[in-house]
Length: 395
Image (tube, rainbow, N blue to C red; front, side):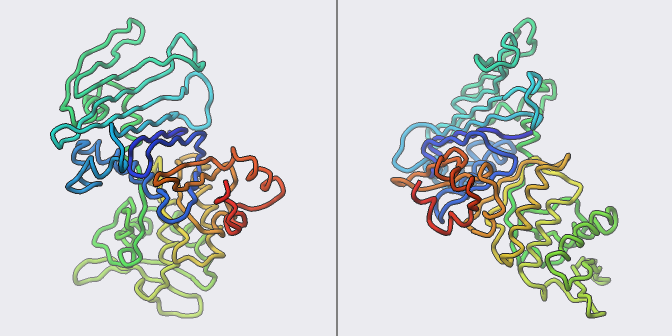
């Protein structure tokens, strides 16, 4: 599945913005405080809302003020989120239509509720052409209908709590197949926030999936060592290309408490050393490679400023690894935020969006649609060079 369009209204710094023609590898560039992280909060909010309720998700994001804190400052009205996506990335035929999901959230008596929620498909009579859409699910304040027969246009009434997403309730029911892909997609979002101190820590079990903070890195490498030695070998091989003196990365079990610790061995020395003595950049590179190469594949990965702690020369290699993940058969979509010229030098113009604050709210521009940037790119100018020159600020 791939997101091709996002519209946000009254969501924090996003008063009213659209992102169109979103690529598989999407890079968000902008100064500090322009809203890059906020987009990732949208993804986390949707995931939390599915797993609990919109009111609970807003409390998690906005604290005790909930809706009032998340809604854009000095605005009125509802929070709106719209996604347009395809279930089969790259395919353009009528069997792979652009599907719309719309969510509108409001507040009443200090409690948030779903004012409007629908999932719509191109009308069958249009045979995949652009035009009128029909709503497969259509709900408001917990009450609505879902299409149970496309041929007869039969709809069934359903009722849920008004602060719950109908999308999740219908997915749990199991009978409504068209909602399943989106629910699975959202629940498998992975917003990475690797913390070096956490990634250096020991684990107590082998685990298949890397946590957002990387605090189970040792456990995942233990799992790869036991079950997928070829994958671990590939990861170490890539890491060696960046860090030539590195020989092996392994795990060591503590016989007393059963904990698993990472061990690193350099080529010139016989005795390995523990993760706490390894550079921050090495740990972070390893964590990202584990995230990208483990057998468990995420449909969408978000990474914030991956260049931090990493030697500039290796940052471009990391950008290539993110792109490779999106191009692999079992990979997914990757969103990255950055303000690193080195990272941007490895990014194509079509992959970059520029975020800027104007009058307190965020604007988003697809750089491929800016004539000045395109002209510079046609003259072999790299995005990082343009960013360094302050060129984006003149758009």
